[in-house]
Image (tube, rainbow, N blue to C red):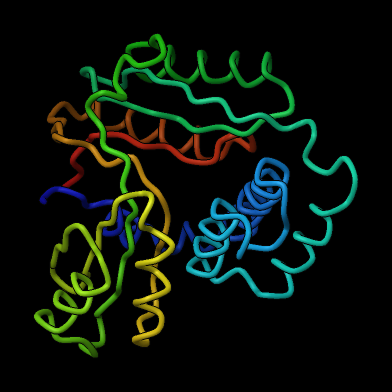
Length: 244
């Protein structure tokens, strides 16, 4: 499996990502609340979706006290009742495929914002399913090996022994892929072996990547991603732009 460079893209803008940490925690908190609502339990042992979001929260270094407070709030009557999950699909510059996962309490506001972003910076909002066919949903666990603490062969064997579907080594980063249904099991097994994750979540992974060569296209694509990720209603932005 090749081309999944999302972690490297994040690393290149680490300072900006650090500045957005509070916003990231807010988005994860919303996911936790909705996971409790839809899963019917604030106990991750009885709610697999919640367990998945907690893994994501911990990988993002969200403090345990924060997670606990959110779960206590989520268990309260009516918490999260106004949120609904809506996914938008469309095209960026030169037809780059883009999927935006949102969680909103105002469908009209979010739809208007998404249409504006796609129209201003890309080729427009598309119908449901217009680009999703070119992505695969996978569990993605990123292990940072910048300090050289891990040996590639050992990590690969541990990952496969724990039930991973695939493994990729790129520079100082190891990426472990799982089937979505196996994500929590593989994560727990690797944690049991002492591994920590720089990122851990269910992602939409492109089957193929597209390069942009025109400077204006690159500028607009970067701007599109920025404005979408800065939108409070947006949880995740997936795309098949292969950034250099």
